Length: 510
Image (cartoon, rainbow, N blue to C red; front, side, top):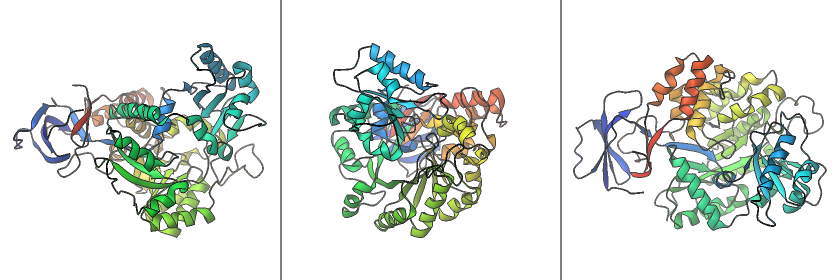
């Protein structure tokens, strides 16, 4: 979209304030914020915001952008309440005759933690026959495949057809076999949709040679978002050898591509009962009754030391309370900086450790809404410390909000609404004591830039048709009942009138 050398945003409102202000943008930065009519705008193009609210552009601090782009085109299984219902959705999609010969049917979003029946390869075989079917769970940590689907990903036989954790994760790329040109087109479309929700930047943690992928995309003209490209263990040596540090800007990207953090997944997920916990899951016995620790401390600590020594921040996936404790131990042992990704299930004694170590809690509040019933069943009696955002904030921990798209939609307003309401779909708030305030949630979504654009900062801005503080105040702070759910719904649907990235429009409706 078009970019003016200078742009004056006139007649804006700032969050929680009523007096109109003007903002002057020049060369990709905010160079002035002042009372309406007081800035010397010179030849700047003038855009009248007519009282719309402006705040710094929004970030999603945990995405898998290519997977999100693919999922937007896959069979949606999120509404399936049983294996039988999911199989029926597969049958109905196949009946549409949209698959090309030899292609696999890929579905996404099932959550079997509460299903009354058991997913099996035979159940899919009955509706799909020889068509390969690969259904990926909503948390990405397992997949359910037909017999032909197993062969499609290179597995000759399997007793159930449900591959979990280490059985599945190395094979996940097999279902993402899309030509680069097509994948890049779909990613550009997904990025435009994100910009339409006020997003100016993402931390992309795709499991691939991320820098190579993003260098290609920016060379081909991608310019919809800022991207911090994370690195995984297989490519860590390459990044260290290149001398890249977290935050370094990559040439050829117009300043939009940065080296991101070093990512490690240390345990599983709650829905699959593989999050690594101090206590065993109800009804489970054996070596995996407490979940799965995929990267133990004797592997994690040396990896983090290497990354930290090379100037990389660390983004450590930990969901179970025991996994979180071990991740914090590793931060303490290495002096590394960075974040725990997810921090879903925590021991109370670890709250202060986050703050003391300066470890960011990078959280995805919509997961609490997806997993509340699973937690009530499989983490019964402990859910007061599940997704404990309020306790983390009270302990002084810095929060960063995200989606983990495609696990949840790449929409910061969904995350904000879940964080401040702990409710969805008209249900009463779940553990409302763990809500966080709306200001806190917004500040956790602006990449540390607070709520007010400031001179000298990047001209990354979102223009809203409503003040979010006024929308979120509809529940009167009560946190329960119809008013709270109505406010949450309104936040989820926050009208975004425009998004500016480095002073140019990436989305505009007025």
